[in-house]
Length: 253
Image (cartoon, rainbow, N blue to C red):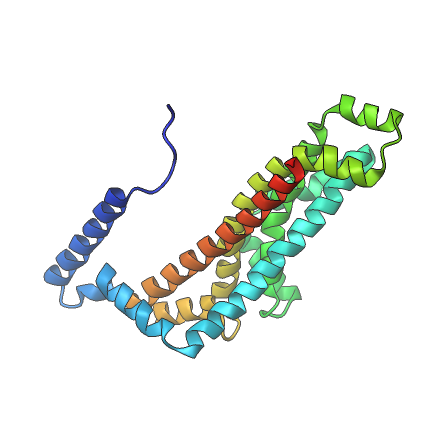
């Protein structure tokens, strides 16, 4: 039987202990060793202090709204253009160069270029959109290609309405590809979106808080904000994937 991939409590405890021992060793070896590596306990305590403030939740909401907004726009655009490219080969050929270029170009290059065109407040939306779009578009296009042609031909012969074809043929076969795309895209959009905030420094964002913590050597704050980014990203991923799984279950019923 294949092992399920996932976190094990003992493995998490091992690395937390290694982190704690490393922080203690640095603190003992250097006068200000805690500035180099904050301990997990200090980081957790600082996260609790930050979470008790309204400014923390405003920053989380600011960043989440823009990053998740860019993700949703990428899902909509990727779905629409994948459907267009699946129907018309010319559209697929036309979209292939920009999709390949976005996949290959470093995110830092896009961030710096976008700062020339956009206000820093809109930067996380744009960068999140760019990073997620090729993943959604290419995965859905592959799902459309893999759709059973015999079923589609039978639907045409019997004049099955488009809505029933979408629900009964396309949706069950494409949803696994969409789930795979959004699972990867949710992680990408948060990494890229926070990177855009750290470089663009929009006021009130989580990225701005990370940069401020780095500038002032507030190492516990740096780890606390990083943990907050990871936690919010994980929550969004779990909730969105649960929604996709619910849709998949309804489509299969």
